[in-house]
Image (cartoon, rainbow, N blue to C red; front, side, top):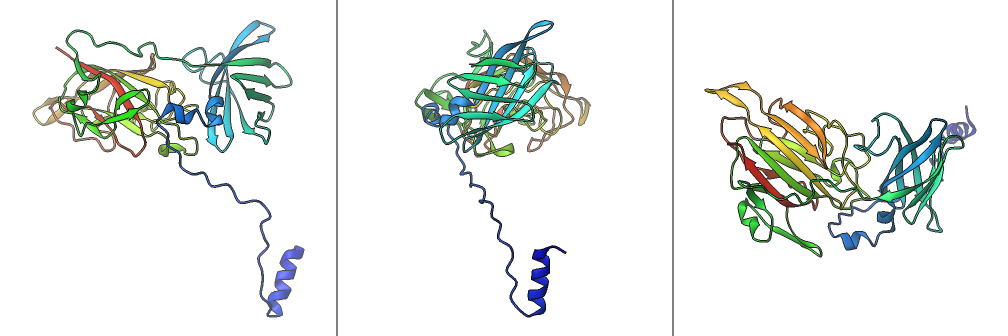
Length: 339
């Protein structure tokens, strides 16, 4: 029996009050919810400048090899780090080889990396990285952009949102006015309904470093108001079916192409509705989805409506941008109905 347990037993036997041992560890700091849609306000947080993607090369016996890193803010000066051999997702990474570490901002403001084997520092858009063996390099911060960002609607497209005033095309349509523009707010359904179509959607996730999981930049793009392609700040995560680009609870994306918060992102979608004979579904709805220029779903078959989706029927349906309580915004939304 330990001394503490023995003392407690003796005190109890003597009829004396038993005082539990005090935990000498400082209680964890409470992370207040932050949800910032305004880029200039997020820039005031020093962690915002650190979070992001970094690229460089390492020299091996076989020659120079590309390497990428994703630094994810976790709030209060703390970060999670993934070092990806071969490059960033969608740009060289094999989807398997990854080294993980954490980083933290010290009292002097410097962000220092600590891991099982990795050490380094992050400052001024530069990420020095060492592992005591093969890796000894400096990575540079990059800001990737989708190659379909700003894509203009072709002839025959139905422009659902391109400028102020287009909010009238949406049930519940409203604008969110920010310093860099007026964008479509969440919680809306297009008044026009669609069968088979090709669509382009641009969205931006808020800065929410103190939140995680489904509480971090959550929304969704519902096709025909039946099938959800998840919208979520899952930058640097594994890429599951409830994360960005996932078909909610049905299919995870082939690759997690989620960019850091407050970067504009794109979905390019080819959708084929379910086929019915009378009241019987004989063919499931299908979709091919490209996220930030990289194919993440290839002609998948929906297993039925996703959570919150409407019943499958042989009728067209609207686009819906889900309101999940986080300030996600949309722009440049258009649809080309199939002929």
